[in-house]
Image 1 (cartoon, helix red, strand yellow):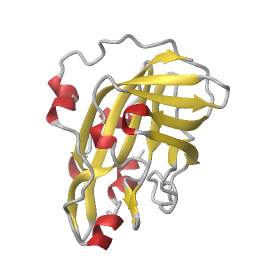
Image 2: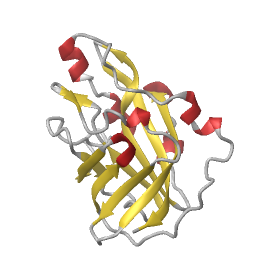
Image 3: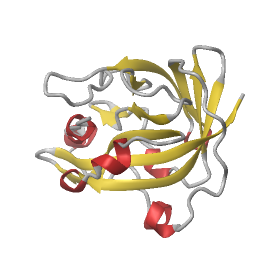
Image 4: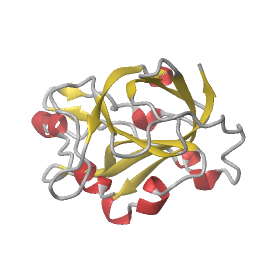
Length: 200
């Protein structure tokens, strides 16, 4: 799907503006990686839902409560991103799986902008077992449980692992991360892996 290209180009505008690397966003620890836990799916998956667009994402443990916009692809074939000035806005890939139906749904958002932290600044803090809630247009709330939180440098990004098809309802939440360069910004992405565990 080419998502990594757009997200890896996040410039870390706030860090560039402030001229410091002392305020970089948190990154996932090795303990949160899937490889650290041989059986990451201790909670069974809930039954898949019919398709319905999501309107809002909530991640209580890191105080995310944000509306969602639909995202398409750029001319280069990579996933577009929400407007950087709208700090409390995330997006979902609307030509793909809707959160809660069988397959891999993709949600993406900025880590920062010129003025400071954005919606997914603390995504790297998210731990296994945390919940992510997606309010859907049909009135249901799809609740996902985090299986892993990993960070990848752009040149080693595992496209199939992140975007590949799934036989149950899964979710990936992505923002910029990895090492940081004042010249080119963030060099990779933070990716949260989760699966549907309940519906309200």
